Amino acid sequence: MTKASTNTQENLLLFIWAQSFVALLGSLFFSEVMGYIPCELCWIQRIFMYPLVVIYGVAAIKKDVSIALPGLILSGIGMLVSIYHYLIQKVPVFQEAGDACGLVPCNAAYVNYFGFITIPFLAGIAFITIFVLHLILWKQQRGK
Image 1 (cartoon, rainbow, N blue to C red):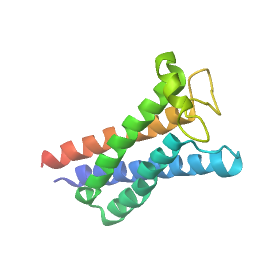
Image 2: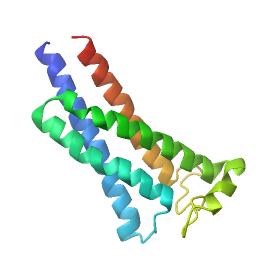
Image 3: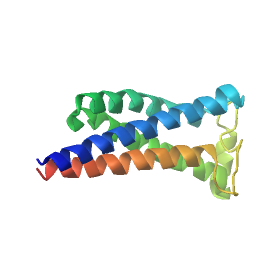
């Protein structure tokens, strides 16, 4: 593998770690600073996002993409949960499912920037970014 390819992979790992870290900080900002109580699906998304900070942080420090495979799996599942949560908030057919979500209804939107950017949308973008970049890394590894 060339030095340029290695640097690209290390940069992608660092970018993935930064994305997961920003998502972690964002979720803590909304709950701890803004006082928004997370619904059950928000908690599930946190369960899949928070370990990514550690997984990709260790992979970036060790400069080893192969140890980050659990991150691909967690980000894939988190992406699906985020998409489902967003559908509950925005698509009328799914909204009834959000009423029975727990103490805080999952169809409630604390934020709704530009009419479509909600907290699950932000989490979904983070999960999709992490998932796609990891797939790119995986493809580069297989191409060695």
